[in-house]
Structure formats: structure tokens, C-alpha cells
Amino acid sequence: MKIIADMHIHSKHSRATSKTLDFENLEKYAGIKGINLLGTGDFTHPSWIKEIKKLKEEDGILRTKQEYPFVLQTEISLIYSQDGKGRRVHHVVLAPSTEVVGQITEYLLKHGRVDYDGRPIFNIPSDEFVYELNKISDKIEVIPAHIWTPWFGMFGSKSGFDSMKDCFKDQKDKIHAIETGLSSDPAMNWRVKELDNIAIMSSSDLHSYWPWRLGREATIFELNKLTYDNLIKAIRNNEVDSTIEFWPEEGKYHYDGHRNCSIVMSPKESIKNKNLCPVCKKEMTIGVAHRVEELADSQRKGKPFVNLIPLSELISGINKWPVSSPKVWNIYNNLIKKFGNEINILLNVSKEEMLKVIDEKTADIIIKNREQKIPFYPGYDGEYGKPIFSEEDKIEIKPKVLQKGLGDF
Image 1: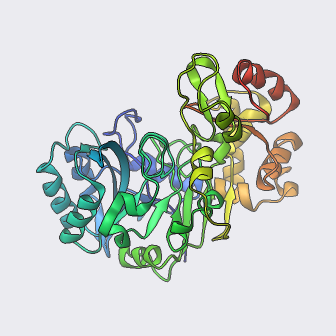
Image 2: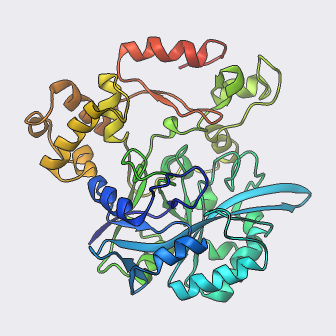
Image 3: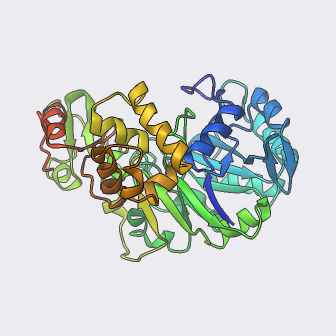
């Protein structure tokens, strides 16, 4: 059984999320996208756990009335001091039952509140956090989230950890997987030897259910049966089949830069400039590509993956329409009606079949996406990267992003 899973999401109870981000919409758009397992998101929030408990629970998997499956999941923000430095790290937590979720929430309530945000913040060191959750149940899985993101990733430039051992100390062996985040892909993570035997997973970290967010990253498993135990066994045995990845260059923190001054730099350029913005002379936000270069000590290869731009972004970009435009959705929905779901269209449907539904220009960009042939101006300092769909894009994008920079794209 092929399971295409997006196991890091949020609910309408997290900050900066859609107020219609509920199970009904998640189930609907997961089907359109081609995702057949979602995390619940935000299981510590008192209002959301009430909704979660309305789902049918069996074998550690929760199901809607239409039998769509969810796994119990949340994200926790840990902000603390260690070795004289401030640390800010996000972790994804998977749990085997709502009973265990209740015990996790009870533990966290000893350290603060859970009612103000779906992703609550606690002053708990990562090693202590893992230790205490494993005391509750050895079936709980803690996965460091978007590990390279500057502000809240384990290896991020602002978090200050250069190894998993630094972060988790004597609890390191209880960490079986990491999440790539939008600004890195598995190949970048292969360059760190410490991750050699760690499952590399990808998830969307969605804040809305739209298909250019939901499932933009996903992890694929081959399981005999979908149960929590089988899922966790696959993670702990590094039996991920493959992943679907956002293009790292499209992520918000791929390159170094300073958004306020419209400066973006490759790691090589940034090092030449002593990591300082040439306009204001302040330190730039050091991106994922730079941090990977700093920690790289391996050249191995791992599980397969594919980088994909979401279908609605392709239709929008090649036709110069807003992604929410009815024109985009008309083409998108016609494709879904004919071919079932977005992931199938992006990966499998031939150009000849697509031409029965759409024009050649749009079909060509879908194939070009599949063949990994769309270049980018990379994201930096909180700005998403820009796909280059045409010569016109080069003229439109480059002056905005690079007019004051030192980019060599």
C-alpha cells in the first residue's frame, strides 16, 4: 500500500492560519492533491482536540466519516538557553492515541499554556523534552522540524547547534528522522554524515488547505497496512520510500540576504562580504545553502526524491494570472476531473493526454517541471524564491531582487 503522507500541518487554531482550516477542507483538498494521509496538527490545543476526538480512532489512526485517515501530530516550539546561548527549535511530535495526547498535554501544562496557539512555546531543552515524552510512551516520535531554517531549525544559523548531539545530548538515539523544510531537499541533507542513518522526511507545514500549500512536500511509504505502529516502524527503520520536495530555491531561506535592502547572495559571495549587507553593513540572514556548506562532511546518496512546483503555481506562472484567479482554477479543475489528482498529473500523465484538456504551453510547463528544468531566482530572508517560466520573468524579477545585490544567477 502506497502512503503519500503530509505529517506536519496546522489547524485554524495556530497563528497566521486560515480560519476555515478544518477537517472537512483538509480531507477535501488532500483528495484533490493526491495525499492519502495527513497529520492532525495542533493536538495540544483544547478546542482542536475536541474536534480530533470526534474522529474514529483505530490502530492509532483517526478517520473521518468518509474514512480519510489522520495521524495524531503537533508542532512544539522550544525556546531556552544552553551553553550560554539562546536556542529556538521546533519539533514535530507524533502520538499513538488520544489518551497519550492527553498525557503529553498534561506534561506541557506544567510548563506553560496550550490554549493561546496551536504551536505553543515552552522553556524546555530538547533533550529533556524527548526524555519526558518517552517516559509517557515509547511510541511517541519526536522529529526535528525544518532543520535548516535560520530562526527555528536545529541546524539553522540562529539556533546555534552544529550537530544532533549538541541538541539532544544523551537522547540523540531516540531521534530517528528529520524534516527537510522547504529550503532544503534530501541531497543537501546527504552531505551531513550524522544524518546517514536518519530517515529524511518532508512535509508541507501548511497554514492553509489550498493545494499550492497542502502536500507541497510529502513523504511516501510502502506499508502492508496503515497503522500507527507500522508507520512508526517504517520511520524508525529508515524505510521511507521517497519524498516529494518543494524546490529548495523556492524556499524562503535558501540563500543569504537582507530583505529590507533587497540584497541576496550565494554562500560564496556572502563569505567574501563577511556575511554583511553591503547596503546597511548589518549581518544578513544566513540561509540554508550556507549552513549546509558549513556542516557538510559527506558525499553519500540516499532515498529517491523529486522536486516539484505545485500545479496551480505552474498554471499561474506560465499564463501570468494570480494563483487564486478563476482562470487558473478552471484549468486546474479540468485537469483534476480528467486525471484524478494533482500528484498524478505532475508525475505521470503524458503530454499527449494533457493536450486533450489544456493548451500546449501549459502542458509543456508541466512536463518541464517533471523533468526538473525550471530555473529559479532563490529565496532569501523570508522571501520566497521566484520560478523563471519565461524570458519575461527574467526582466520582471531580476531588477526587483538583485538591483542592489551581488547575485551571480
